[in-house]
Structures are given as C-alpha cells and as structure tokens.
Amino acid sequence: MSPAATAPRLQQSQGAPSSRLLGIGGYRPRRVVDNAEICTMIDSTDEWIRTRSGITQRRWAGPDETIAMMGTEASRKAIERSGVDPADIDCVIVSTVTHLHQTPAIAPLIAHDLGAAGAAAFDISAACAGFCYATAMADSMIRTGTARYVLAIGVERLSDITDRSDRASAFIFADGAGAAVIGPSEVPGIGPVVWGSDGEKAGTIVQTQAWDEVLGPHGEPREGDSVFPKLRMEGREVFKWASYTVAEKAREALDRAGLDADQLDVFIPHQANDRITSAMTRALGLPDDVVVSHDITEQGNTSAASIPLAMEALYAEGAIRSGQTALIIGFGAGLVYAGQVVVLP
Image 1: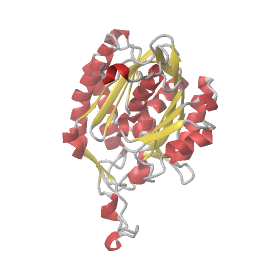
Image 2: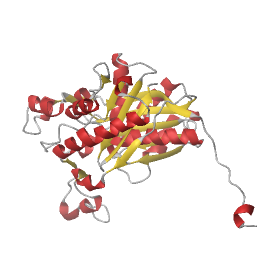
Image 3: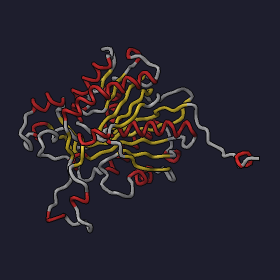
Image 4: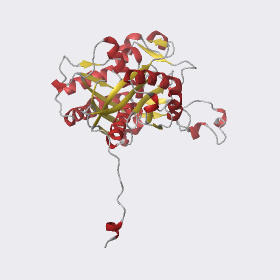
C-alpha cells in the first residue's frame, strides 16, 4: 500500500456560498486646504490645479488625527451600519503606505480599539489599489470559511510624505480613512477580482529615498540631513497607464462578473485625478445614467482610502442606494491594480 493511501486526510473549512459588503464608513480630517492655500506653497493657480486634476480642495490631518484614530473612526461607522457586533469580526485588514512604524502593524491596534478581540489582523501595502486587494482577500476568506466577518480598511496620511514644494504633486495628495465590513451572503455580492502588477513601471510613483539613505544605523540623520522621504510621481506616464491599461482591466472585471456596461449602476474608481476618471468612463463606454464618483474634487487623492470614502459620499448625496451594482477599481504605486463589481450595502 502506498504512503499516500495510509496518510490521514486533512479536513478543510467550508464557508458561505458568497460574500457581500455589509456596511461602509469614512473619516475625513477636519482641516480643509483649498487651492489658494496650496498656491502659497507652489507657483500655481486655482485654475491650473482644477484643469490638471479637478481638485478644488483637499483634507489634511492634524496631529491628533493619526492613522490609528482615522482608521478606527471610519471602522466604527462601518460596523454600526453593518449591524455586526465588533466581537464577531474575525479579521481586520488595513491597507496603508503611511503607517510609519515598521512594526507593529496598525491593524492589531485598530482591532483592539474596536473591541474585535482575538481577530486576525495585518497590514498590506498595495498603495491606491489596497482597498480592492483587501476586498478580494475578504471575499476569499469568507467563502473558504477562514473568516465569517472581515473588516477592510484603507487609511492614509499622505500629507506626511507630500513634497509641498513640488509643483507637480503638492496639490494632489490628501488624508483620510474608509472602511467596509464584509460578511457572508447566500447570493454573490462581490464579483471576481481582476488584479495584477507591472513592476517595470515601478519608478513612476516612488518614495524619493529609502529610510537607510536618510537615517544612520542608530536613527541619526545622515550627514546632518533631516530631509524626510517624499513622494514623486511621473504624472503623464501614470495618466496614460490608468486611462488605457487600467480601463481595460476595469472592463475585464465587468466581463468576469457577467455584466455589460449598461447593466452597471455605479462606477467608483480610485480618486487619483478627475481627468483619469473621465478618460476611464469614456473608455468603458458607460451610459449617461451610470453614477460616476468625482469625490476627488472635494477630498483630493487619499490612496487606499479613496474608494470607500467616495462610496460613503455618494450615499450621503442620495446618488446611490443599497442593492445597486458598482464597479470599483484601484491603481497606483507598484504599479498595481485591482478591481471588482460589488453589490452596494
């Protein structure tokens, strides 16, 4: 008899047939920074910034509005709206590139603050695609039975790593947090994810310096230089990539969900640039009655937080309702992308 025939058979967990979003929440910092204020930092005008990005204002966090605080506040809203007890959350996933501690991750601290005792908790670094990455992971966990309720959070303080003297990017980045509770469903509420990366283009969005280039082995500034690493972005290249390549991936997400463009109710792309949103909308051939998010005009680019923040804003405006189908897609540094069709909570 072969060893395989005598080996014990492992058991595997089985989860719910499907998953869906159960509640959405967001947190927007108190400080509103309009284009006039940005123009005191760079040589620009309100008209130029609006034309280039669509942005009229953005939110920057104050000293007390930490990654933990903003992530927790957004999550409290999502949990309350979902009707799920915090103690029943099995996993907390936080997408962020601006939690500046190498360890511990911020997810366990947020889980503790929320009362999600014992929940698995970890951070991911998928930049502006992070919320869609976390949503895909939550969907798989729920359907395989490794979790019943998952909290997916995107939270950023991009103002910490924004070069406020850089005319090309100082006006783009902002702060905030968004969260979603994802749980079991008898019918599909989250479509197949389309995700991937193109590391050949990694240099188009980068942190200017590695930490070991800025700090010595004992944390001292090298050669007396206390310059903090900042973001740099090749805007033209990112625009072309998002407008064409990512738009194709968005269409693929629709196809994999079994939907045509005229069956979609809402389009919520990552709020990177309003010109990119318009270009993607045209490339997808979306009908005029599809609601398209333009939250960037009031909020700026909040990376991993932008999609849940934009979704919450559309609810507040009365533009969307529960049960509608929404295409979400994130894209950013890496370069990475991820998107799926979801049923609105």
